[in-house]
Length: 113
Length: 117
View 1: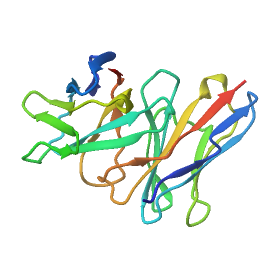
View 2 (view 1 turned 90 degrees about the vertical axis):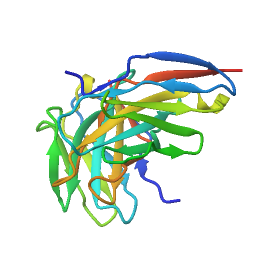
View 3 (view 1 turned 180 degrees about the horizontal axis):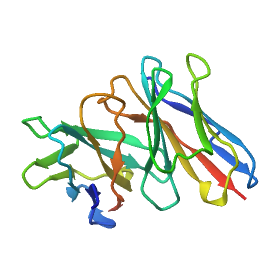
View 4 (view 1 turned 45 degrees about the horizontal axis):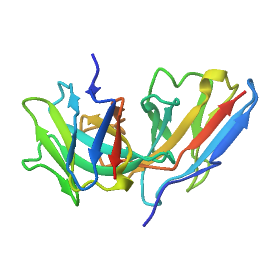
């Protein structure tokens, strides 16, 4: 069964460094999402992406964040200058239609030191 | 106001018993979808079940069913015949609207379910 994949599973970085989190959505899906979950808290929406542009973004998704679909398969989240409070699990999700079920990847645990 | 409320931070159930996890929601949009996800200790988010606002019947998927009470704005998850592997965090989520751009999910705070042998 097709699934969303994410790499790396765990990333440790120093504060102020740039990180890129990678996702490969399900192949026939058209809508892509990033969410984050700070340890012990609820899952929060960051951004959605369709047709090579951002559809919606939350207040969390400030100028430090960017997303890109560099080729036909990858979907990336870049954090330009990481802060301690960016430490969280980051989930990528995808759907075929914009109201369909969102299928999540296994997540990338980001630790900022 | 919270859009999704899960009032049970933790629940215990005996193996083979049924358990109900509560979820209430708040929206003024007539078109919405309600989802339940399971998050085991390994961290991944596993889709369990979906209920659309216009669906006439309660959704069922194997041992999972959704008790959808639209007037009360509740969408409780019922797990029948609990298994040890059901021990996990369970999140209720809502997608509002049906048209336009990609629709985000809004999540509740989750319920930690522990199945006792």
